Image 1 (cartoon, rainbow, N blue to C red):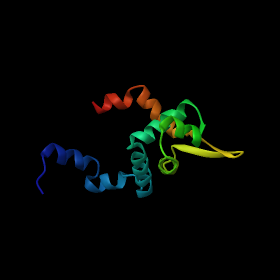
Image 2 (image 1 turned 180 degrees about the vertical axis):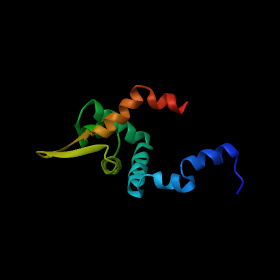
Image 3 (image 1 turned 60 degrees about the horizontal axis):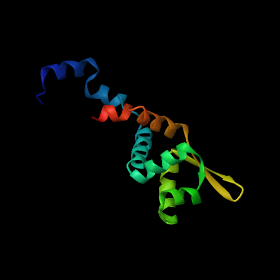
Image 4 (image 1 turned 120 degrees about the horizontal axis):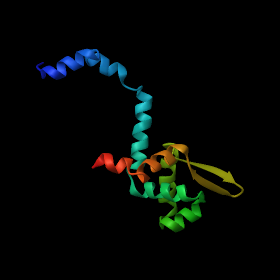
Length: 120
């Protein structure tokens, strides 16, 4: 296969195609990252994260703020939990949802325009 000379030379320096393949993260880490991106791909879920970043809340208050039906809210909360972006802890009769360190870091990057600046 014919490739540009500068690309061929720099590719050889890192061990060729095998060097690239061997440096990739393990499949499980890539799947986890894909779940994270999927969770962040919905504006409602991002909104829920910003709400919970402001204050931990029970479902009834998240529902009141978002005006989302119970079943739809439950679906979105489960996606956020599966991605490791929120936790839900039983406190008496309530489940209180909170952001995780991961979501705080991601939302912090957005708030400081790191994400916005790199996408423009």
